[in-house]
Amino acid sequence: MLTGKQRSYLKGLAHEMSVTASVGKAGVTETVLKSIDQYLAANELMKCSIQEGAGLDAKETANLIAEELHAEYVQAIGRRFVLYRRARDPEKRKIELPR
Image (cartoon, rainbow, N blue to C red; front, side):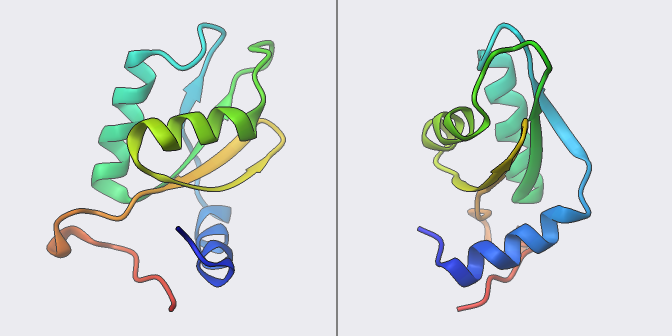
């Protein structure tokens, strides 16, 4: 579980990021989950969006994906949300969270 300080730090990192995955009208499919899982394994932090007209809530969708992929929900603003998952391999960790 992320502390408030860690969440704020990750929000700052995510601010400059581009959206790297989109959830479409079909919702959270296996393909979307696989794509997000692979990206998190390589980068730890990612920004996703929900396509217009999908009718999904960003916070609910982010929490669903986070639970499914053992990741952490960072934030949701509008149709965008940010997820974080620490790399399992210490050598591949790119983000050092504040304590």
